[in-house]
Image 1 (cartoon, rainbow, N blue to C red):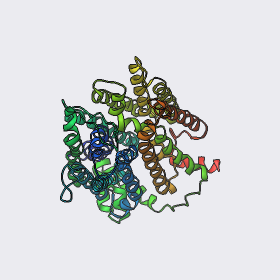
Image 2 (cartoon, one colour):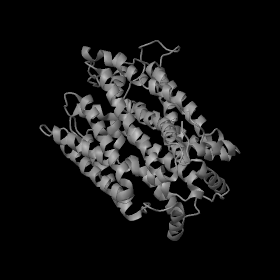
Image 3 (cartoon, rainbow, N blue to C red):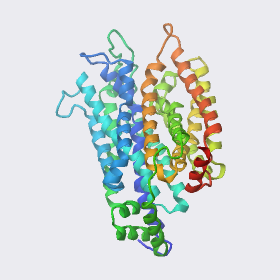
Image 4 (cartoon, rainbow, N blue to C red):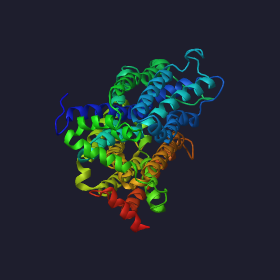
Length: 489
């Protein structure tokens, strides 16, 4: 592969492409539950030794997020101690183990096909293992890309990681759709002590379909774990462990020999910058970073991404998996809108417009869900809600978290912000099913309109928060951000 005074773009893009696969697995693992959860629910509702309630199902559907919290919390330690590359290899192996374990949680320990309380615990353990991989990838993939990319295109390349996350969700929607094939999702009802009502046409989905959906992740996970072995460690980490010559070699291949020595010196100068205390720039700096993460999840998007087929099925759609795939395509298109406009329009305008668009979509769902003849309006409202997130809170939140903190507190501040993101992801995902199924009187739609009405209100609050408190980071250097926060103290 050629290396010139300008460096090798093909080499850069090849290693970034491998790292971006981590983002794809991030999206794949978090969205695979969307097609599998109904079959999984019906399977465990046939257990004889415990009652599989809506609360249990909400927890099981979101259990991977417990691992995400753990993984994101450990990401800084592992990236520092083991390096970015080895940490991503670990993430890939955890993805692979989780995929196979979730497909066959009975392996060696339990009777195959017999749902029990102990089997449910084992299934959730495998999902948590995968979640740890997601947590590691969510923090380290953007870090890896940012540390190998030249400064002039760093923002664009890091943004492609968010595109890979959404693309991974679209891929798994397609995979789940093709696995389901001519089979149908079960109609899950609670009768007596929680036995599932399963028609013969849905039996395959309950016994086998959900297993194939979880197991399908083993293919991209294995590929990622293998390919990441062939990419270099980042120059910044190599310098931090005293391997300057290896760092110079990588920098030369990416940036060209004429620039490599200067970049290496800049990295070495940065390494000696004193780390300041977390509150050096005031409470609001940390608070705004945390609340960006909180709002990204509290607006409720993952309640749609994780449960899309269930929602479309409850609306009366004939083929909810196909509608879910269509929504995935829409999500991809609007993520590209953010990638190509964030440097032109700025971060705040996109976040405010996206928040208001989500509010309109959420209120539309709340007002029309379950009303005969309004199915198409409800579907369009969900599409507006999802698309508005994809050009705003989805990618822009990650961009702001990477930019908003001064360099001397970035490591600790980002770790705290990302941890809050996964905590609220878990809260939203685990409460959606019980909240959505709430009834004040038998057969009413209270849970439907309350859930999406609540998300709509939070979207409006998010828009006000961005408008009043979040600084615009477009065109600002890290030194500018340090000065801004010092002036705000």
